[in-house]
Length: 101
Image 1 (cartoon, rainbow, N blue to C red):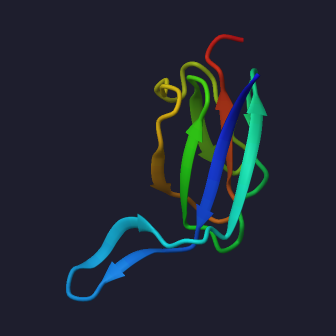
Image 2: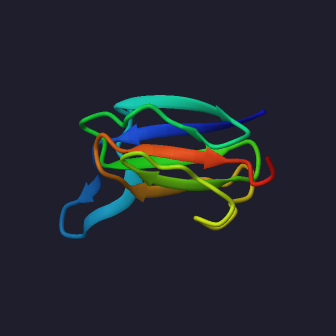
């Protein structure tokens, strides 16, 4: 069984005169761990969450949305232990799939 690790952030670093930077402001507003083989969803993201940092200990497919179901065809296969930082809608969920079950 694989595990995905989600760190939820409300905002990014803003540098005066330079604007927003792709660096999350610690501490996260929430964290989640999702165990998966077949498609499995996270809990709904925090109402303050606008960005997430996601990594998993196994290769996986991933999809975000109100009620997402990741499959081998909905998103590229991500390699294990690769961090991804991206924007999300508060309240959405993230689905993970190991790509082989």
